[in-house]
Length: 331
Ligand SMILES: Cc1cc2nc3c(=O)[nH]c(=O)nc-3n(C[C@H](O)[C@H](O)[C@H](O)COP(=O)(O)O)c2cc1C
Image 1 (cartoon, rainbow, N blue to C red):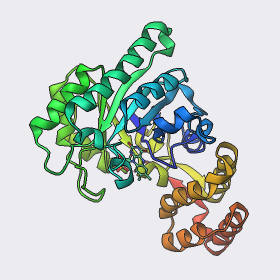
Image 2 (image 1 turned 90 degrees about the vertical axis):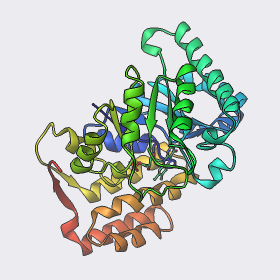
Image 3 (image 1 turned 30 degrees about the vertical axis):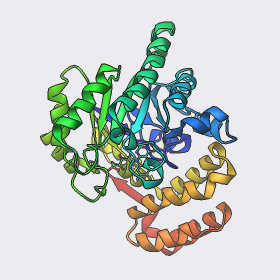
């Protein structure tokens, strides 16, 4: 069974993959969603979004957008990059995304409109795969939710039938509806229903897997899935894949060094305009490792720049020296 690092806007970039790789990595890394329109107009930041470092062969490019033409053309650009595949974001339910017609909006539009977009992107991938060598082949996948709050099983499964009929080779299901918050239990049995309906297609499960127990619980309900995607928990615990694989024994992590190295990698792989938001988002989750998580968050998130952040990190660990070196084993 595969373990996958999920797509997270402002987080799933090279610096984050480098961090996870330090602990042995995972099987696949979905990128943060890449906006089709902005990619095509060649915005000044696009080169940062399409950097596959440090493991190009494990990267899955996630595409978002609101119209078929942009999605098709952006798919042509992404196919030419190294990487394992191309994924369409149909799961994001953040209001600014779906109101713009992207993310989960594709599950709510007239089926024919969504089918047209999927067909066009699917053809791009198919054409690319015909002309590219075996090692350059791209997998075409979709990450989705269950749909709107009044979704029906029939509606959901016929939507998935449409995706498969248009070349989609893998589905990642985050089994919640559009409005269901991340605190609501995920309905893993829908992942299992997908496995039973499409025995030849791999299904990845996503939602609330954060340790061995939650992984076992998810797999008990959906034993047929071929992969489990973890998003938030791998930001808090970039070593989680190592713990779940349990290949090696206990290991220790110097939290201060990890934080300093992460800041340096952000500076190396992200434009200065992004440093603050990227670091704030990362430390929001990472600080949950500390006993005084809220105190650490307040200290780190209020830093005025990276030098100030480094000073605040130094101060935090001198006040809480017991937090600096942590030992982890199987969870
Ligand atoms: C900060 C953040 C950014 C996210 N960005 C994306 C995104 O770009 N594309 C996407 O499909 N899902 C995105 N998601 C959703 C996650 O990939 C995942 O589906 C959700 O967090 C549930 O999984 P988890 O419980 O493992 O975190 C994001 C979630 C978070 C917390």
